[in-house]
Amino acid sequence: MPRKPRRHNQRPKTWPITFSPFARALAHMHSFSTPKRHSQTIENPAPTLHSKGNGFIKGNLEEIPEQQSESSDEEEGFDGVVQADFSFFDPKPDDFHGVKTLLQTYLDDQEWDLSGFTDLILGQTTVGTVVKIEDDEDEGLFAVVTALNLWRYREQRCITTLKDFLLSKACQEKGVSDKLRLLLGEQARNVGLLVSQRVVNLPPQLLPHLYNALFDEVSWATEDEPTEDLRNSFKFNHYLILSKIYKNKNIEKKRKLSNDSDEPIIYVKPEDEIFHKLSSWSFCFPLQNQQVDSHELRNYRSMGLVMAVEADKIPTFRQELSSLIIDP
Image 1 (cartoon, one colour):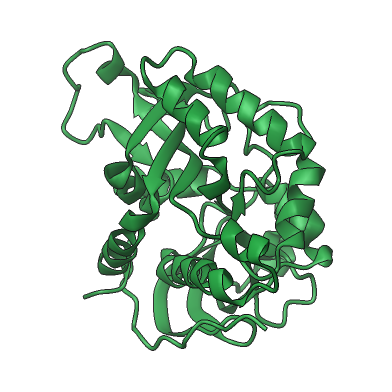
Image 2 (spheres, one colour):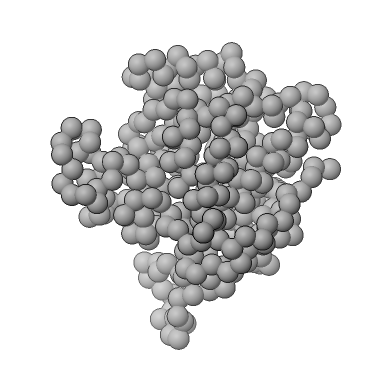
């Protein structure tokens, strides 16, 4: 049996979803299609306690309004704050629809075997985590994180399509395309595809615990998996990460920023700025699936971000993420 993550008793610090001035506005602009009770963002966090399978993260949650309430009478007297306990669980088959929903724009508007990709994630129970609300009858998913060995799953149709998609986006990047091709081919035995998808308003206080659980499980899998092939499949030298950012259009046009609040890049996920800084190489590409069309983002375009991070940089990543979100 795989070991379970140790408990943590830190009191988290409240931080915005991203590092930019538009962070909170961005968080309220879009979310995945989840039940109303799950469209929430954290306000004042309570002390945390984490242990995969039976631990939880407590927090006071403010509900984000949807387009229209079914009954205005039901909303009367509701102050917009819900107490919730978030729990970490091993993936299981019942999580199929929740995970698939979270991954629906993972490859932008590409038609591919998303169901097969979801099955790969759910089939790897020793490394991977889903986040739910404690004792929620609907079992709605708020996040999924895992690391898939690209060589182990190389013959899966979904992985083949994913590789072709990435290579097609990197073809215009001088020098990067060859490096990506190496990771996807000759070096794939030791490359982990780090998949991390979540509702945009997931409390950021969960992130250090979520990533600590993932990287602990990867380490333990190199010792605890039943066969040598499986143990070796988690001995990653690199992690390949596909994510999303908003990039300032004026930067690309080499114009002076209109005001100081316009950030060059808005990182939708705070951890991506750390990954980006630590990456060996990276490249961006324009996304076709534009989920946000707002006044606040008029100077930005939605971009895919692909990063290669060496595994020996992960301890630094964990430390910096913890310092950013948990440390006072």
